[in-house]
Image (cartoon, rainbow, N blue to C red; front, side):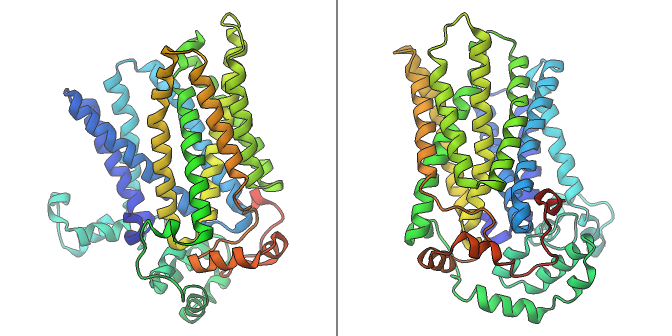
Length: 435
């Protein structure tokens, strides 16, 4: 819930520090209980990094550029998986490996806090022990929307009455995009009129109950709970059982990463030209069929089994990235972070269920693949009940979401509607628009 009060950027930068510290502590501790605690903190923080990063991407990108930007974020996961295989091969002791993958987040944290120096100057402190001197009100400004290389979401700032900071960020982005004159024409008066037209019905506070309070939001939440749970369970069910393929675990890790490249390329194309709903549903159903078909392949045909599993994993990884983007577009800005966080919890529950389903293999070898495959197909069918968001402008409030559903806003009308605060005309290419 921190994102609702502190925005997107602050919790994101803080997550970098927490992941670096908890990761390094995991490599140092000798107690298994302490190891589990720090691993829990790492998993919790990692979700915060993903959700806040994607929220910033969705809320800053123009409508036609969101797809490519979201998938490029997914390619960073693929690149990380490939690098991890190489690093794990070179660094065999697990403690040093854990430390090696945790240090970069400390670098990200320090790089994100370039205005920390100015805070210390205001306090006229020469060389103080930083975290012993700074109070909470001092820490969050340099994690917030003032300065730094990563601006806070202007949508969130407007939603919380910080119009002056929103105008500053919009002008900064306009200057970076070579549209300084358009940015200068944005004034507090223009922003105030936008707030009055869009945010008049916003609630002063939100709770998880808002995800179920109204019909349209309730339908979205229930479908996404099934999708995130099933997608996560099937994905981790494949990823955690690499040894059964009879190949080097490092080689299989690389293969599972390489297959994501063409799979995400196909996902990008279909999301741009076909739509989110058809793309996610197709990938989930194909992945489920691959998992189920794999149990009919003889054990001695390891190459075919590995290829089918890699294809299934590529489809699940691509659908995961698409679902992140799809979820951000389905929820209104007012509860976007809450919705993404709640559905992400269901993904964590799916990850917890994956090893339990794998253990069913002790009672019958067909039970795990049937379980993973069936849940993936079920998730694909659940996606069909969601609304299409391709080329749709983001909705700001719950009431606006309900009005859109009741009015039956057509895709053609949505495509003709421009962003409410635009800094440039949309180009012909989604990739060009992203850049």
